[in-house]
Length: 564
Image (cartoon, rainbow, N blue to C red; front, top):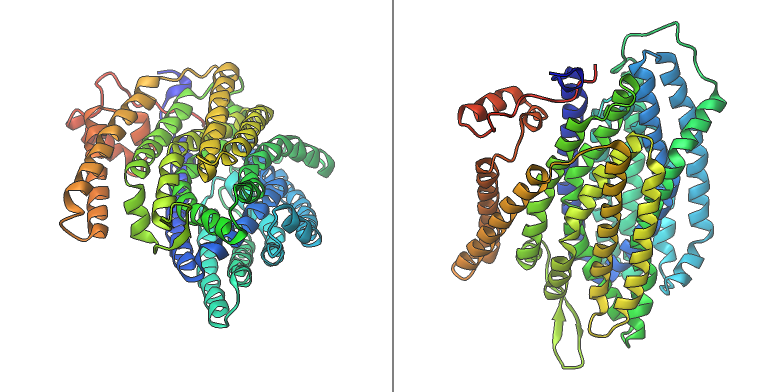
């Protein structure tokens, strides 16, 4: 067994526990988010949600510009310095980055406040400005939060990040719903209710920032490698230069990616109006898409993001210790886990789109078409989700490949792939939405074309620059076959039960059957390697059990990449 292929305690503790802590927190956050968004849309309606989501997409663009690259840069620099025992430099990196984030956050918030009316005019939604003002302070506090999260992630302590995400979500849930209900009871109109609801997001981030500051005080020596006093500490100027050098390409890439929602905000409303629809109807249609279809689409990738976040400091430390060596096992296992999670979600959302939406949301009449047919929110959003579902796999793989390229110092290439993807999105969205027979369906179609473009280019860069050699059969084909089988089982189960029992119970039974079938087929196909199993909590015990029942190929050995 080669030095770079021995089982590693570092991999086990750094990647596994970190990824699963973030995955657990993301699941909790998504459950809380659903507990917020579902009653919120049921309370204030699709028209108000159009204002809420439009303001949020613009905020996300500013958030990406302000913070996207810097946490990654901090975690990479801290991971590398800590791996070399440079504890003083680790603390210095944090101080410099916190000051930089404070300045950036202040400028971002001021920009949103000053130009809120211009954004409203550009989106042809004159009342959007109020929601923008309500969410603007979030930029300042999220910058502070991002600095602390980057610090803890660089030390491979994901607990503060996970807990802060939960606090943020709980604050949003409790306060957002409270303010939304107050607005409705006070008789406010849709755009005022949206602004009140979005205040919960701002106050949730404030609470999260307070917790992280306290965590930093409580965990002064958290996860430090033994101190090497002989190492010199770089100056503030050199640290800022490196932060900016690493952060700018990642920031540009992430900012371009966030343009997808902004493009929808600024293209969908005017293009649908050009088809003869009034503003109220357009806002209802767009609100149904962004409040019913998009949140469900966003759920599966959030299970992948913890792995993509955790792999950055892991690979950065590996590269610091073993320059010029490709961590094939770590990369392949992460991609395989992403496929195993994303593919069944892609198929499941496609075949059970309407039952899942009906399980979570109330129905609402959107508008009456020229033929006199009343279009309901369930039907419109389910059809859009079926189209959007294929992008779940694309965006999940993009998250992992972006992180791998960033870890190897090839972040500028993610800019190229993302730029081309967003050009594809802009052109296809503008062209397709303006076609009467396609209309709003042009939004998920253009999103899929964008993500497909980015994924293909990312894979090209990954293989070309890191010399990574993917094994397609085990990494993608086997999970694909298992997902196809489980989706057939889900569809058949729902069709069997929905006319006999309550459709909500039938949906839950179908999802449960799909999960069982998928797991069994995955095991029967021997899709998992020992390296994958070792990435799980109690991995060795699970691996021994699977070997006993011959669910792991005989030739497969325990081979995770060595870091320490």
